[in-house]
Length: 209
Image (cartoon, rainbow, N blue to C red; front, top):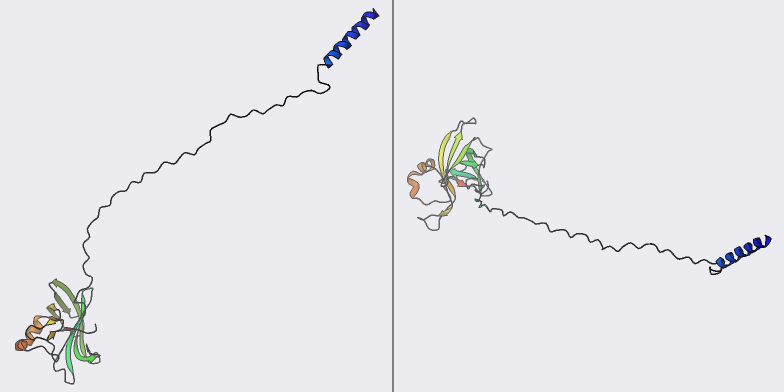
């Protein structure tokens, strides 16, 4: 019986010895584990922005009418000096027109300052105000109202006459002036005389407004 047990032990030792010989010494071969490689993907390309269509609407061209002049040739000071200018004193009257349709009127003693004739306010004089309106063809309706103490009042239609050469007297220039029937009636029979620097038949445009 002991022989059988001994034989069995020897067989077990032999089996263990044979199993140990199948390894390469005391080392064990370890197969490295490679991480899985993700499948290749196509590069992401940003979408090309689409061009935005620009729609232009044609603008109709409207012909504009030129604006009317903002000034009128009457917008000045017009003065008439009558009587003998060589005398000690002369008298006269003047109109001063404004863009708002008003007009100032003065009547009194005249004087000359730097070749500019004015009403001398150091002497008694008449001053009134009124209105004016354009009638067309260089004609104007002037209304002087009795607003002051003088009570002067009249309505006249004046025509503006630009400066021009006198056709009856070559070389004589008639200055720009305004005329009405009031002045024409005063001239009377003297209309056949040439204008001269000593007489003023109509209110003339002042050198300085």
